[in-house]
Length: 143
Image (cartoon, rainbow, N blue to C red; front, side, top):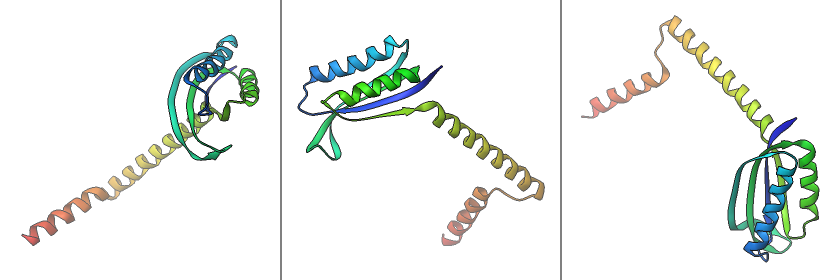
């Protein structure tokens, strides 16, 4: 069963553009060999690190979004660990995060609808309208 993943990795600054391309091609070829689909390849280039890693202050950032099987991700992580030029990497499964955020968004929308119905039933104004009216009254009294 395939899932959506985002794989991010940082390559040492000593590695040239050609080496970064080779590492990126290795990652993408591993995904395609596992019958995965690469949705997005985002190369940020050479950026400053938030903190020194192995005495390096900069690194090449690369992010790959793909839909692939979980077993292929395990193989990919093992390969990234073995590469000396890769300082750090992270793999995020996007499906779980999106499902959770969608559930929360739906719940908040439902709560807002219930509040609006309750306020309409009581004959109250919306809080935003009340503030706007108070500002207009204070502006008129200042003039």
